[in-house]
Length: 402
Image: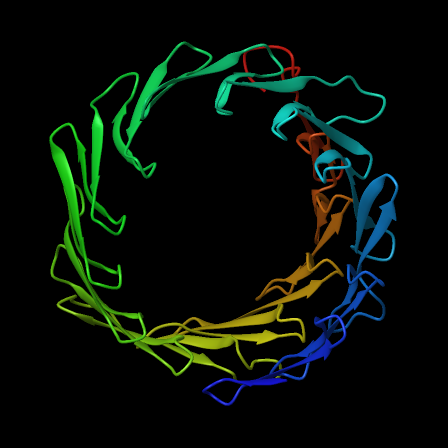
C-alpha cells in the first residue's frame, strides 16, 4: 500500500501478507528500510538506507528463552545485549557486553530483587522489594541497606525515605493526587474536572487555575509566578495563538501536514517573525530544511538518506556564512564534526556500549575516556596525556553517596 500525505509526500510499505508483517518502507525521498523475520514472525533484522548489510539483528534461543540484539557501531565495535527470560516470560537476566543485571520475582510476578550492574568477576548487591497483602510495595531496601517504607491508609499513602522524611499523598478514587503533604513546607492541593483535567493547584495560599475547551485543550492559565496566559487553537488542534502575561501574542501558522510554517508576534516590540520551510533539496522531503528570522539569521539543513543532518548552514547578516558538517557511524552516532571558519574536524570514537572513548581534533581534547560496569565515567584524560582526571564512587553497599 501507498500512503499519500496532503502535501504530496508518498510513503510506500510492502508486506508479507501471510503473516501481516511489514517487509519494507520507502520514504518520500526514496530511501528504503527493510526488515526480516523468522518462521514464527519474530523480528530478526533491519537494513536501513546506506547499510551494506543488516546493521541491527536479533537472534532467539528457545530453551532457555534468550533474545540477543546486536547493533553494529562501526567495523570493529558492536553493541550486544542479551536478555534471558523464565518460563513465564519474565526477564531474569540482562547481559550488556558482559555487564550483568539479574532479577527475581515472587509467585505473583512482582520483582523482588535486582542486582547492581556487574561483570562475572565483580561482587554485586541487591535492591529488594517487599509487598503487602494487596500487592503494593511495602519496603524497598537499597544495596547500601537504606530503606524506603510505604504505608497505606485508605486513599492515603505515606512514603518514608531513608532519612525518615515522610511524604503523605491523598488521592481520589481515580488515583489522582488531591493533597500532598511534604516533610516540610506547605501542603499542596489539586482539583480536577469531570474529564480528569487539572483545574487548580494550591500551595501555601498561591493558586494556579486552568480552564479547557471541550476537546481538553488548555484555554487559560492563571499562575502566581507566570501571570495570566491564554491559548487559541484551530480545528485540527494546532495552537494558533498564545498570549502571555504581558499581552504579547505569539501567532503560529501551519501547513497541510500540521507543521509550523511561521511565527509572528503582536504587542511584542522588536520581536521579529520566524519562518520555517520543508521538503527542499536532496533527502529533504518530510524534514525541516530551513528557518529564517526576519532581518536576522537564516539557517538551512541538508540530510543523508537516513534523515541525519549532514550540514547546517547559518547565515548571519553582516557576519558571514558558517557551515558545520557531520558524519555518522552505523548506530547513527556522530563520528566527525567539521567546524566552520577554521574547518577543524573533530573525531569521536566509541566503545561497544556506544559511549564516547575519545574526542580528537587539531589537538587531543579527550585522549581517553573510561567507564565502570555501571557505565559511569571513571577516567578522563585531556590533551595528549597531560591532564588525567579520575572519578571514584561510593561502593554500592556503602551509605553516603555514589
